[in-house]
Length: 421
Image (cartoon, rainbow, N blue to C red; front, side, top):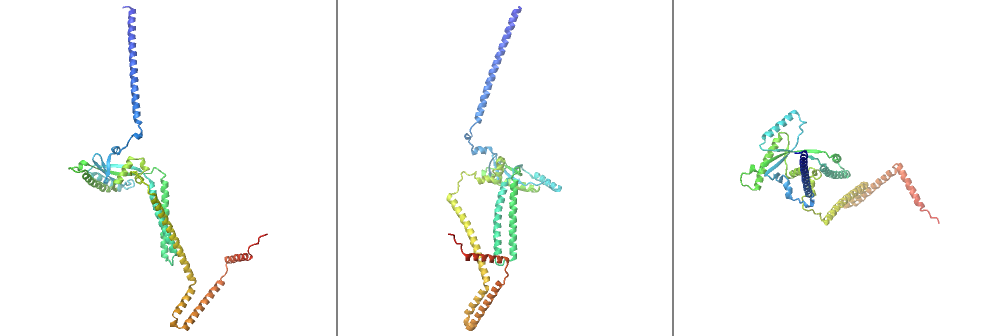
């Protein structure tokens, strides 16, 4: 074989290899492009499914209940779907660090005895809550209104007592003490409200709640063909017995406990499922808002108007009654003063009437002489009182008043100035 033929064979082999390589590369490129297109198509389909309108999604009670781990809350129990019943015991924490060594040892021994007495599984649950001071502020404000109302009534009673006839010193001192006590209570409550409102600016006030969850399975109590109501009653009896045993065992650790009722269980689960919203919309506020109602209606306009009119009538009637009572008391006080001033005249007048009434028995001469003496005595007392008034020393203010009266009299005598023509 010559060299030329060998070269031709090698060139042919190299050409075949190059063509094969080019074909493989082309095939790989086509396959990769197809895979890329398929991936892009799948990605677009996924994005299309994600971008479904919210109005197209329908939330039903069944879908929400399926998401929850429990079926319902009934008879202070959480009833779960897997046939498990739960009862929750809330425990009040103790400050272990501030205890003495003996107290710490007793608490530890009590907790050991609590663990030894357990004959069923329990779960310890700690829930951290943000302290909502708005409820405390509202409670203190309503209490402050009651205190102010009582303070105002005590103040009116004290003023009336001072105006009454011959009040005893003991009664006055007692009323004054009660009034001062109520005033101090009012100021103290107002200070507490201001301090709590200042503290409410800090949003990081946290509180920890401690719970012991006591379970009971349906398989533990199902020993025959019982209805669901009977099974629930048996589960409640068993759970209540276990919860009371837990509370009594924890009492040895100086830990107080109580069984949560259905409303408190609802609040516990609401906070567990709504960590962020529970700070703004707590259970009591939601109940007042009526979120659980199918519809809400405003009160009738005429009823609202009637209620407003009744309120206005009551307020005006109260103010009018107080005003007339004060006026009547003033009139009585004026009448008493007039009687005190004219006491001697009234005595003389009444004495004359008595003498004239019994004139037949006394005798006309004696009666006339007695009346003359009474009139003479009255005239003498009147002249003596006039002399006392005349002999009274004049003060600067009296002189000033006399001077002003003289000036006024002179101006009155002169009359109005004549107009110039």
